[in-house]
Length: 53
Image (cartoon, rainbow, N blue to C red; front, side, top):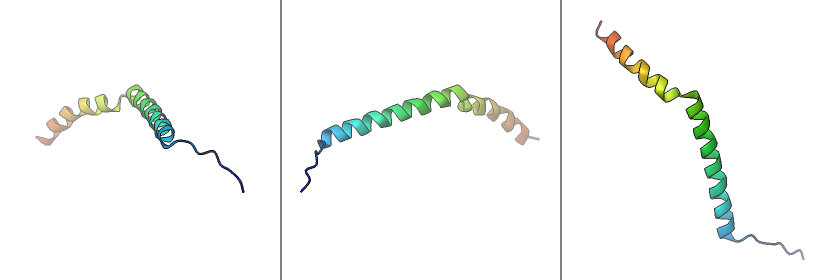
């Protein structure tokens, strides 16, 4: 019969939390680098002016 070393649940949760936080940080850096939100905000007033015509 094989014995398996079980990792404590709290360690798994901590590792998952750390990995998720790293992924979110990388995504946020990429989002800020592309600056999509600021670009779309600048275009919104121009689009509102076009609706009046």
